[in-house]
Amino acid sequence: MRVNRRGMAMVAALVSVLACSPADGPLPADEAPAAADRRAGAPGIGDPDFPKDGNGGYDVAHYDLVVDYVPTTKRLTGVTTIKATATQDLSRFNLDLSGLDVREVSVDGSPARFGRQGDELTVRPAKAIADRAGFTVRVAYSGTPKPAKDSANLGTYGFVPTSDGAFVASEPNGSKTWFPNNDHPSDKATYDFTITVPTGLTALANGELVGAPATKGGTTTFRWRERHPMASYLATATLGKFDLRHGATASGIPNLAATDPRFKSSLDKLYTTSAEVTDYWSTIFGPYPFSSTGGVVDNYSAGYALENQTKPLYGGFDPDDTIIAHELAHQWFGNSLTIRRWKDLWLNEGFATYAEWLWSEHKGRKTAEATFAELLKRPATDPMWTYPPGRAKPDDLFNQSVYTRGGMTLHALRGAIGDATFFTLLKTWAADHRYGHVTTDEFIDLAQRLSGKDLTALFDAWLFQPRRPT
Image (cartoon, rainbow, N blue to C red; front, side):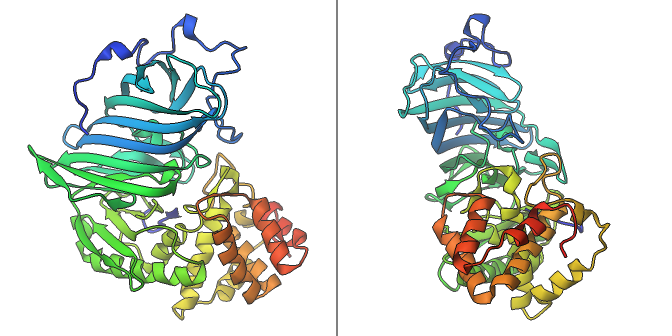
């Protein structure tokens, strides 16, 4: 994610008999979780900073999302089918879902009891699920999506209605505003999207189109597939009026740029810059991890950009090449390599920020060393020095220190171990954890192993101390 400082399908007839409890209330008293029921999945995935995000007891492998959205009424109708594997015996489990009315739930084809409490959808299958068993849960729902608000530094995110469609940018936990899921980056999955909109609009999602859009009866259905593992906060279903440019980068990676008509003049620049950046990062960070690249500029003035997997999203502004470089660097650092816990967010934002400096250096503008030296001159009283980026704070997750001081950490490391080892480190880091999860400790261990140096003091000073390093 990059804060922009210039601005800061169709569900068939469903029977309600599958719903054995109120859609907006808890399970009946005789169905409430018993304290001694060790088979109940946890309502959180185990991130102490975000205890209500995600869910315990299972691991998702695939989401199949069928979404019908009508911008004039702002009504969404959806069916989400989730394929998962239990990580314990399960008598019940939770999904994250904010608002929206659940009409029916089934597990492995059989009706399931369900209840709602806040953003938790609790599901009790007709038959308990055994540890390590695969299972499929299907949730039918509808309503008016309400975007999430009040995340530090962001404002509004999730499924955001626009004048002609929807702007969908879900970091950190906004995916639950439009589909039920395990809403935490530590559970990645593959995705299929079937999105139906009024004819004349375009629906954009992650991955690549599966076949041509199909138009019938005044609506058009778009099918997208992301076959690489993806964190829930990177999923998008951005839709509206768009001008499109299709093609490929010089190295042959499929490339799609889309701009709202208000930003049509940005289309060619977005397309060519995204292609150039993707190919250049492939020489610096290693092979591009996904099957397509590109970007989307929508007309919603979000004040930020988000690295949605394969299709970075720019909210209401014409991105310059530096911002595009930042968001596409995330395709490696954040998307392919995904943090297990939000506290390690510098592994996403510090890396993408440093990529901005590397891009400037590559283009013959300011060097990374010059940027680093300029930032180091900030007085000791600057707030950046009192916020250690190695431990992102849950109430101030996107603090600029996570970005800027995180990037400075990498430059200090580059100076300590030399260019050859540093750039080998970046490629090795990206290759060793491709499509997986990462932690700060793992990065420090790899840096020390490749350099043969004890870097404890360097990382401690730059990542964990509330003062300016000396």
